Image (cartoon, rainbow, N blue to C red; front, side):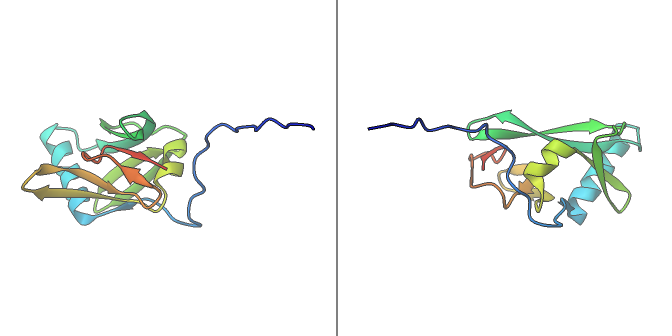
Length: 127
């Protein structure tokens, strides 16, 4: 009797929906512009990146950045800029960035259809 060992491949980014990009709501665009104005630098955009970690496997990171890299995809709305590197975009395709103010606080939220689950704070997810 011969046994074959199961082989595991490295975890890769999920296949994005065809033609889907990252959406930016009007509320998120207004907030990005307001933050850039309060920093005194209208050239600032919001950078989103995805990295390994968090309580669900992957985590979102939000930073302010005025510089675009050759690897960036830039999404604009109403003068606001959203910067995403191409690797992170593979995990975000079809998603929408929103800015929400409710009883639990205010902040950017990502509605990510590729996420199979997420943590309670919404900053980490799994695929």
